[in-house]
Structures are given as C-alpha cells and as structure tokens.
Length: 474
Image (cartoon, rainbow, N blue to C red):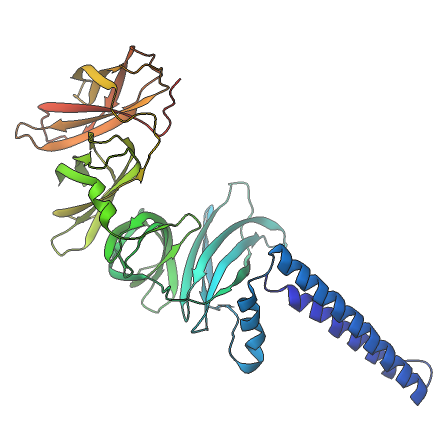
C-alpha cells in the first residue's frame, strides 16, 4: 500500500532525532571528539536502516505488494509538484435515525494525469465511551483525474446497540495508473426527487459516453437542502449501461430534511466488465411487448424475446425504463433470463419498482442485454414440453402447468414462465416459477403466480419451459 515507505522513513527520522537530542540533554559535557564519534555512529546507523528499507521495498515489489514501477516514479515526483495525494474532503456527514446510520463523504483526485486505483475504505462507528459499535468495508475501483467523487454508505444497527457518538473513516489505495485514453464515461441527466413521507425516491438517467457497454455499476445518490447541506441519499446498482447510450435508474433514499438538489455518482465495481462493439445486441430480439399502469400506482405487463444466436445464451438481462409525459423516468423493471436455447422464445414479466407518489407512467423503452454464448452446453434443442395448463386460483391469479421431460437424462429443475393476455390479445401480466426434479420421460406440475391489474380480465395465456442456471443433468 502507499503508506509503507512513510513508516520506514519515520524510523530513520526518529533515530536521528533521538540521537541529536542526546547532544543537548545530558549530565556531562561533550567535547569535539565525542561529537565526532556520535555523528559517525548516527551516520552508520542511518546507512544500515536505509539499506534495510531498500531491501524491504525491493522484496515487496517482487511480491507484488506495491504499485508498478511507473506509479513509484510518479510518487517520487512529489518534490517537483507533479504528484498529489488522494484527498478525503472535509464535507462529510453522518446521521442516525433509529437503527439506521447514514454516512456520506467525498474523495478528490487533484492530479490531471493519474487515476487512483482500488481505493478501499472502512467506516467505524463508536459510542460515547469510545467503544467500537461496528464497522464495514467497501471500495471505489477508480477515481479519475481531477474527479471529486461522492460516496453514500448505510450501516444498520441492532436494537441493542448503543447510540452512535462518532464515525471515522480509514482508507488507502493500491496505486495509480495513467489514463491511457480511459476516461470517466458517465454523466447524469434529468434527476428528479419524488417526496414521500415514508419512501422518498430519486430517478434519473445515466449516460455512458464511451462506446463500450459496462456492467455492474454502483450508483451513489446524495441529496442537499436549499442551503447546500447534505440531508440524505442512497445507492443502488445497474446491471448494465449500453455504450454511447443511457440507462434510467430509480432508488429509494433517506431524506432527513427538504431536498432541493441531487448529485449522482456512478462508479465501477470489482464485478464490472466491459463489452466492445455492438454486434452482440442482435443475439436477442423482442417479438411482442405491452406495459401499462394499473389503478393503484403499479405497472404491469410483459414481453416475448427470441434467441437469434446459434448458441445457448446464459444470463440475459431485460431492463425496462418507464417515463411520464415530460420524459422524466418514473420507474424501472428488470428480469433475468437464466438460459435461452438457440431459436427459442420465452415470455417474461419483469419485476417493476412501485411508482413514486403522484408519478404517472405513459411511455417505456426496453433494452435486452444478451447473455454469454455457451459453446459447450448440454442442450442445443429444448426437450421440455407443456402437456397441459390452465388458469387456477380464486382470482384467476395462477397458471398450473404439467411439464414433461423428454430428455434421456433426469433433470434437477427447470424454469417455467407464463404470460396472460386480455381479449384484445395484449399482454397484461405474467410470472415464473421453477419445478422440482423431473426424471427422464417423467412429468411434474408447476403452479405459477401471475401478476396483472385488477381491472383487466384474463382471456388466454402462454407457458414456456427452459433450463435454468441451476439445472443439472443426471
């Protein structure tokens, strides 16, 4: 880590200071010969320690514990003003409300030509007696040149924990790298704070200005009052943001005062990946879709997608963004498709976050990120069929299907999806569940809860069966 050299240098300075102190504080007088002898001793001691320090640093570099050589060179240029350390700013805050502790703070990179990499931080909470109540750890993968980066952190106490009296933050970074064309890709548009007595929300759009598609992005949200003081915030995650495009987001936030403005700080995580090019988007197409707002502030619907690739696709992600008449994001929906075999279709109904109070949804758009192409998967064709199905339940809110395994092996489980249509043939809702183990040439019943608006009347339905991420063949 970056502070290791400082420890060794401090040891050298301590030896010098202690030895020189002996010259001025003693019970006997000192002549010139004594002084020469002491100075020679100090010089020898400093040389010995310096050699030990050099050996230790070289050993660490061989073990990979320190940044690359170019990072050390940047750090050594501090005397010329070419390198400046990462800074934690003073405008941090923590607020406790019952068992939740909200914490917000900022890092600043004062360098115009360096990226700080793997900034790890640990938040410690203490009671009035200075006893540690708890701690938690997280990180920022990169802090880009001249970037001020805001972080939101929540800690949840038990009811038996004492009140928090103080909070400290320890942090360190692994090293620095030159950008080499890698720039911070994100910008923010159209953030809206949706007030609510219990569940205030923030929505907006995150733009990706680079051509690569990025996955697993954390979104930090900080709220301010009219005086510019931090009064709350929250954080969430986005599964992906397309290259040179945007993604809508929604998140519940803590708000401890009236909110007048919002700042949003997207960041890469250790799970983030980037996908080059645009050709992969054609691996999946949307065949049919319909979404609508019900009478009680919920959004319902679904869509049918098809695998156009020659290989099974694992872990495809459907993401729906909803808007009001003014173009503000009102909510988002998400569903993961574990496995989609070549040429297969499946109907899915995403889970949609409840609308903010007073929000009215009128439009939506859909993005489907195709999953990984599997070149060695067990199946290339779908051996599972639905031999019977009907709508059940007191309110016609279940589809019960009999699923048959026509494969030569037993399977541990499969996913079963259902969509419901009204008399006009529009998708009005759906759901999914998974089966128990099915023996070869055997069958099992699966009951799928389907969600649709209470003012819609179901007429027909479709059912699909596909292997899941967890399916094993025995």
